[in-house]
Every structure is written in C-alpha cells, then in structure tokens.
Image 1 (cartoon, helix red, strand yellow):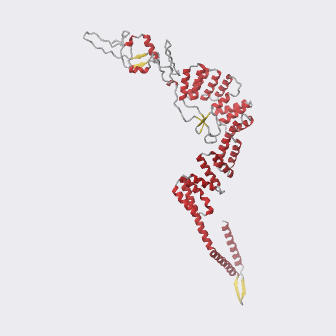
Image 2: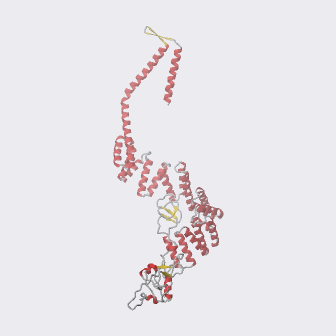
Image 3: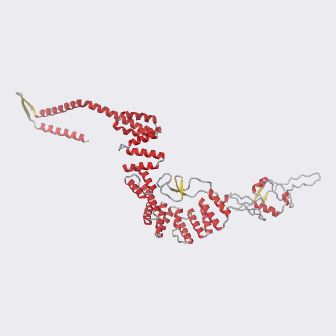
Length: 560
C-alpha cells in the first residue's frame, strides 16, 4: 500500500512539473563542437527523463546478469526447502492418522530435502514414526536429542513425560513437568501435572501460587480456577485445623465463599468456628449447606457441635436441622441416630422406618438393627435387619478411581488427580431391595408341616351329605390340594366340597368314602396344625419357631 501511494505521488509530481513547463514556453540553446542546438524547454525535459530511465534499465539488466548464478541457486534451494517442509507436514499428518508407511516415506524425503542445520525439525516426525512402530526406546532417544535445541525442548519434555506416564514412573513425570513449567509456565499439561504433584505432597501454598499463575496466563477459566482454589484451601484448612485454628478458619471460609455448595469446605469451616466457640456462625454455615445438600457429614458436625451437650440437646438439634428439609431420608436418619443415643427407641424406630420407606438403603437397615438390639435385644430380628442391609443398595460414599473413602480427600490415591473424590453411590450393587412384606415364611418345626407340603398330600375335611348336612365327625374324604383356599382372617382352612360318588353293592347299602387315618386325631390337634401353616405378619422382620412344650426342640430362625 505504501509503494502504491509513493508511485502515485511521483506520477503526480511529474504531471505537475510538465504542466508547469507547458504553461511557460521557452527555448533551450546548446552549443557543442561548433554547432548550436536549439530546442524547446518541453522537449529538453522529455529527453532528460528518457535518458535517466534508459540508464536505470541498463543498470538493472547488467546487475541481473551479474547476479543470475546466485539467484538461480537461491531459487532451487528455496524450492528444495519448500518440498522438504511439505514432506515434513505430510508425514506428521500421516503419523497422527496412524499411516505408518506414509509416515516412513515422508520422513525419508524430509531427511533428504531439509538441510543439515535444520534437521532437528524432523525429529518429531521420526519420534512419532518410531512410536507407531512400537520402538519406544529409540523414540525416547530422539526426544532426548531434541532437548539440546531450545526451541524443541518443550516438545521433547512433553514426549518424555508421556513415555514416563506410559511406564508408570511418577517421579520421572514430575521431573519433566517441573522442568517444562520452569521453561514455559503457559504449558497446560505441565502446569496440571505440577499442580497435582504439589497437592499430593501437601504443598498447598505452592499449589495455590501455581494456580494463580495459571489463571493469570489464561490457562483455566474463572469457574474452574475457583473450584480448584476452594479444594486446595479446604485441604490446607484440614491439615492445619488442630495446629492453627485461625489459619484453618480463614482458609475454610474463603473456600466456602468460592464454592458454597462444596460440602467439605462448609464442614471444615464449621469445625474451625466451633473450635473458637463461634457456634452461631458455624451453625448458620451448616444450615445453609444442609438446605442445598442433605449430607450426613453436615448433620453429624451440626449435632455434635458442642461436645458437652446431653443426648437430649443433640436430639433437639437434630430435629431443628431436619425441619429445614422435611420428607428427606437423611433428615429422618439424623433424628433416628440422635433418638437412639437419647434412648427414645420409639421415635428412633419411626424415623428409621420413614427413611426406609423413602429410600431403602444399607445404612437405614443397619440403623434399624441397632435400634432393635438396643431396645429388645432380639438377635433374630437383628439378624433379619442385617440380612436386608446386605442386599440393599449401598449408601453414597466418597469415591475416586474405584477407591472408597469415609472422608473426603483432595487428590486421588491412585492417579493423583486433583478434586477426584465425588459423593455418590458405589457402582457395584450386591442385590435388590428386600421390602418387609416380601419376606418368605419361616421354616416350621417337625411337629408341623409347611404349606408347600399340601400339594403332595390330601387334606381331610368334614364331608357334606347330599342335602348339605354335615356328616358325622370322623368321616373324611380325599380331595386335591388345588381346591384348598386359605382364609385371610381367622387362619383356618376352608375347602370346596365336591359331590360324593357312591356305588350300590349287591346288598343295596351305600359305601362311604375311605377314611383317612389322620381323621382320628382330635379337633385341637388339627386346629394347631392349620394355624402353624399360616405365614407370619408382613411387618414382622423375622419369626422364631416356638419350642415344643417339652422344651426338647430348639427354636430355629430363617432369614429368607
């Protein structure tokens, strides 16, 4: 653009000059060699301009001829370099796509076409080709050779870091990442690895400083940076909670301000405030966290705010916290635990049952077993609740990379990843929920027979006469078990009475149906056997078999 403007300016100046000469006519007289030459002023100006232009063109031609060998050599050299870079680019693309043969071919061409002083540029292609071939040792040597070039050093460190990660060498990973951060703090992978290293080592101040650097150079977004800062501040507060309560309170409150929904920050801040007898402020933080997330750790810290409180006071605090989130299983469990500690077994049982109805989980069944053991000491019922707990869905836990922890941790113990622990239900499930009304009837003693035995035997009943009158007691008839129906109310067995088929003999008498030997037992014996066949009520978690009157047969318990 500047050149065009300059050219137009020169043309304009020439035009103005020639126009000025044309408006002022005159003659130019030149005497040379005894001759006198007379021309107009305009013609003289045109001749001078033509002579200058001819001299410039002639000089350009002579210069071009003189420099033509160098120009031709430079042209072929640039063409060769361009072809080499094109081969290098094609080879890198082929290596990224996994085309091993194409990558090898382009690598050979790049080596031939690119000059020796620029060969470090093709080390990346060679290393990627070796990685595709599976020759990791040779690839590591290529990356190490690239360390000598300052421009390729960050790339070489990244390649060595990936190789150390593949081999599982955490120390080598940290070394390469720290060296890369010192060279270029803007490298995201190096900053992430160094941040995780400092967090794993417990260097919270160093990790916070590195996080501030990441945010300053624009590596992480504001939301992500606030989350990570809250995690690091919470971890720092937890580490110094006993030694430096004031510093722990400052760090935890800042973390809670950055992430109000982060439960560990709220719990740690409340603990730090409770250490300094600031119960009101700590309770407000926990109440605000409870309204957003009904977390059992929030409830535990809230109820245990003052170690000197009685069990009644803790129960009152549990009821107050539960009132903030009604119809919630965690609220019911919080009251149930506090009521169990206070000896309010009825309230504890009601709240635990309410939690089971809302969300049947392992913890609710275990709490129900504790209540049963503390209230009645009935081991049969306790085992029944424990059996349900085994097959119920597990309670949410802190989980990261397959590792389950009772307490939150800032980094994963497996991969060292920051903020890896999440509060969720473990992925594995041992079974489905067992509802109270789905329990199978217990196994009865040998004195009675289970209902399943009916379909293999006959049932004795009092037969009916032709006109519907009852036959004399002691007369029995055999019918299929499919026609037997159990009465839901009184526990007695009612049957349908089919017509009695009889045959007349030669004597003209009617033959009665065959009599079962069991019909000679008393009515009390038959009634006892029928009542024993009735299953237990649905709300009974377990039934013990009654011992025989003589006490010789021990009672047995059947879970499912």
